[in-house]
Image 1 (cartoon, one colour):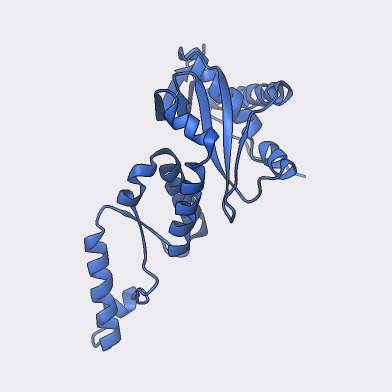
Image 2 (cartoon, one colour):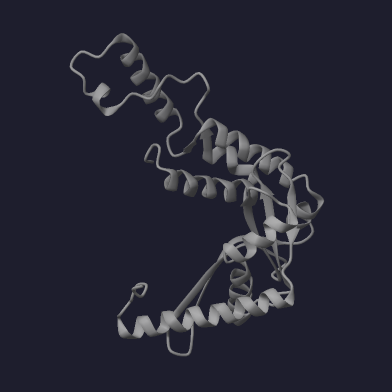
Length: 231
């Protein structure tokens, strides 16, 4: 993992978040935090130095042992690991979230692949499918107020995700009864909000999906992917 790469860090946090939410019982087996008292990670230059200092040698030995002990695990920043544990624990003591995991059989990370009438491939990946019918999607959130969630639903395209996933699932033979977003606050008190979109939002999402997919089909058939127009 590249150190200090914000994009990579964000992706790793997202991966760890879904593991904490969807497979909480195995999270500690798959992810580990760097201890607070860990020495500073030696650089490549320090590792290749002809005469490294005693502190550098000690740091190299510590990190080599840490990597060996945790081989195969994903290494998280201490703060991220702590945050994810708080988020997991808060979510899995929430009555509505508990219902998703304990009221009926469920599957997680369900991949669906399909082709339209012209053979263009479509796909989606359901976070959680309860009793073969209710789709749930887990999201991190900087705020779970009504205004901020409403803004995120449109700014981040969630209004398109619901109908896209629902329509592909139904086409795949899954009798979808509903779709719920589970928003998880990333800061104390780590609040949880379960949100279902209204018919108007789903209608707008389907229209946006149809337009986007039409453009995608045209570009795929022509092999031409234009950028933004000038001006």
